[in-house]
Amino acid sequence: MLIEHDPYRCFMPYEPEPVDSAAEGPLAGLTLAVKDIFDVAGYRTSSGCPLRLAASPIHGRTAPAAQKLLDAGARFVGKTHTDELAWSMYGMNVHFGTPVNPAAPDRMPGGSSSGSAVAVAGGLADIAIGSDTGGSVRAPASYCGIWGIRPTHGRISLDGAQPLAASYDTCGLFARDGETLLRAMAVLLDGETAPLPDAPEFLRPLDMLAQLGPEALSVWEARFGDLPARDVSIYPEGVEAAYDAFLRTIGADARDWVLPYIRQSGMPLARGIGQRAAAAEALTGAEIAGGQAARRAFTAHVEALLGPSGVILAPVVHDAPFKLDPPLEVFDRFRHDCSRLLCVAGLAGLPQVVFPAGTVDGAPFGLSLIGPRGSDLSLLALACRIVADSPVPA
Image 1 (spheres, rainbow, N blue to C red):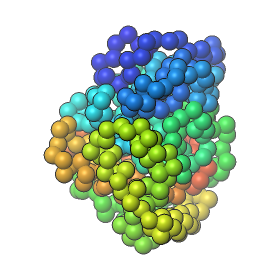
Image 2: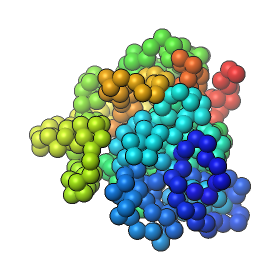
Image 3: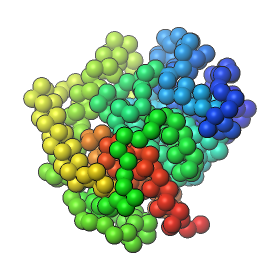
Image 4: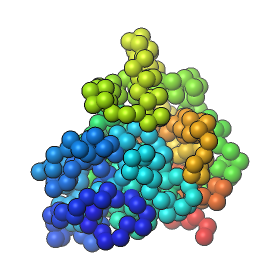
């Protein structure tokens, strides 16, 4: 890492290696951290896994997504921690430790882009690259009280990044404020493919809100309750049917790269990864085909709700981050409860912008906007306007 002091333990302790960036550009003056599943010239890539680290070459080329930000003037300050193989959502790596959540030091930071979220929340980087497959940017953004975006699937290059589940994988970004995030995303996206109109139609997702407790629902009402919105149901066949399609299709994708690597390397499996690997391996062809059909139907339903101008006023996750060292049953239940909400944008491949909205149980709790495919920049600009009109109480 290039920074001298890392009080939140969010950076990989690599020997410092300067990385060239442009002297001028739209991001000049901003510092950049990069999740350690993306290659950076002069560094190894661990993907949060000691065996991957040991086998990694020192790369001669930086992943194009990171290179774009460097070419726009951002200054690289280090590679950040991730859950092992990016296949978790807590930020608690059994090999490299847990970064400290600056906004709630007694809580988990969220993952798998834990180090990137913490680096931004702690002021050690202005922007940070993460990846979001099942929620690995969106959840830690909510838990650490910062901004984050999962872009439209396929809009940002994942060359030079470790895959997890190809039809879900995206390159996302964190920042402490929406304006900075918008500046950086404008560089990454090279323009907008489907901008929102000046007066979008807001959608109130009743079956997403039904998954929130009273305190979380109060945060949603305080932020969005005064906006004129049409009531809709997001899950056409129910929440569990959509979640089942998510689990089947993301598991099927994981069999293309992650499972072969796990089996060929003989790596020891942490409890969560072992369970997910076994479930993915056990999927039958019929189960995968059924999940893919359900995913197509879900996507068609959500796209019809959105049309070209709809915006879902969506919760990100169901609750605040849990406290460190909870009972094992909390881990399992929490992941599933989060993923029932996070799977919406992932199943449909849609952009989702997360921003700080309040607190639940004394810890950060974010909200979000989900928009039509290709509306990333105008969705982010809309979130900036909504937050400016109703700032979070101090």
